[in-house]
Length: 412
Ligand code: XLS
Ligand code: MG
Ligand code: MG
Picture (cartoon, rainbow, N blue to C red):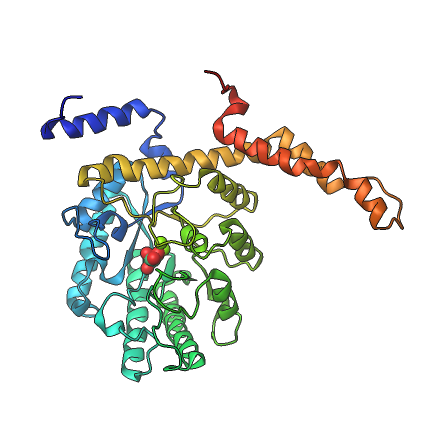
């Protein structure tokens, strides 16, 4: 192969993207509640030990690109665009007005705001640190984020407490930290009730996001289930306003089945928001685009969510790989992530209406014919042949993923 000159590389990528075919139109993409985070598009490819690979990019350009792709919603941390020192000051509101203008010009809505309680040195001991001054500052930050959220028309506020956890056990009392953490969430909810009343808007949905490890140290609330217990602990003054923002990979990271974690959140009525991405079990939070690693599992996850009428946001909380250029971020990374999501969502619909899966599921639920007082042996025998349907359903799911049910054949 001849080397490809630099000035021909974008054209090559664009031509091959076209050859992939099957992309959805921006109008179709906008029909879904898909949000693009500011930080995902602005991610420059840096990592612990690794330098950035892409130039910086501002929110105006990101919103323009999201609009072109057909990503109709945008999410941001308070400090993604606003410098930390400007927070709560006039300078903040000038920037927020610029954001609002750019959102309006591009027809993109702000769906979610989240407070950065992990990056700045002030959070060295976490947002629920011993020092009362730090905790007062954390309360200010979450209340201020609520103000920004209402101003921009958001419906959701997310809280991810940070990835490092605490390095030394025994130096803090974990019950104190949890109480203090609850105080910050309470401050946000109370401010929300006040602002929502003033503005005649509904209150926000406050969503806790868990991550087990980066891996670094010990984490107080490492999983969505721990967050559920925290919500029900009695520490929150408005538990009805607080739910979850599970992230697909964060559940996989600790070795869980994301679908099972989502089922538990659904049953508790707490699946408010969902960060979508992909990656590997028991490794770093690599935030790969949805469906690039576990498309079959993703199909099953979306079957569950479609079956239960989940109608919250699907937030593209992934990181375009370090190897993807700035051009590639908006020509390949985001559009293909959106399109894989929509394709898998459509396939989930096919699974739900598939006559084979339906008949097999109904038969399993009907169970075998057996006399009322049958014992263990008779029950085993009565259901013995039906249970093969579990494997048959799994096979059918793979067929639907591969398109075999639509005529794809294995041939050489
Ligand atoms: C980090 C989290 C973060 C949250 C928002 O791992 O996923 O991006 O979603 O702070
Ligand atoms: Mg996330
Ligand atoms: Mg992640």
